[in-house]
Length: 290
Image (tube, rainbow, N blue to C red; front, top):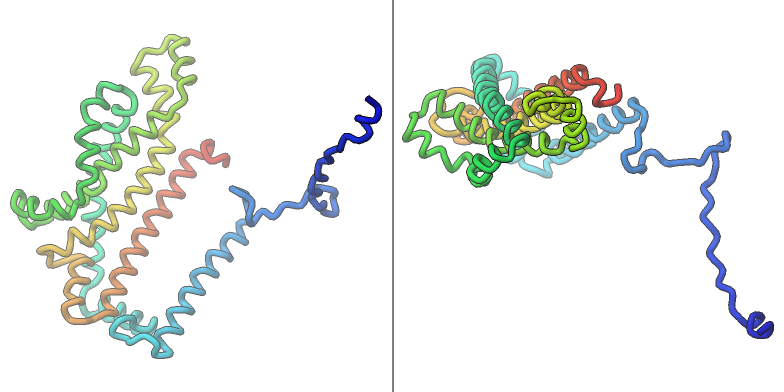
């Protein structure tokens, strides 16, 4: 027996990897590549600015050097000059106003109807069973495919363009809101029932407070989709708006105007997103730990 024990091989475990410590004796951790790790705000801003500067530098290198023809990609100077001409000679402010009006009206209509419907779908299974099959089916149909029908049914006026924005955002907004409401923890509902709350009392005092921050983030996300649909809405039978300007510039081979129009829509969408982001964080500081 002793001989067998002596001849038995002993399997040694590999030593644990030691994490180097800093001067304070705490383990070092590279937060830049730590999953969901925080970095200083100043560092975050500098990295963001660096990405924009690099993109601008690449654009300048390709255009000023002549590697890319100005017909396909104008220089930053040409884009700036196109913007000056649009504002001073073509009334571009009016086009911006019309585009913003169409986006806000169409999206507001979708939110006013879609958010309550999504809340009821996420709360009551009977409502979900009634609406979900139809809404899910229509959601996969592109809004641009409805344009011939909209022109036939309601003409080519403002209502047709607003309706395209509505259709492009409404159905996804409803379903995403329903999912957010449906993810409210069941323990909270059971606790509310234990305290004697009614069905609608649970909806008012538990489900809405728990899901409203997430719903607002969904609204912020879908608003970005509305800005992408405005081009589709204004490319058909429109005499005003940024989309109409882009189409007219394409016919005249004014690439600078096209790019400036696209950049304008991007800036408007970014401003609306930042506005909602700040408003949501100020309205629900407890949700974001601030």
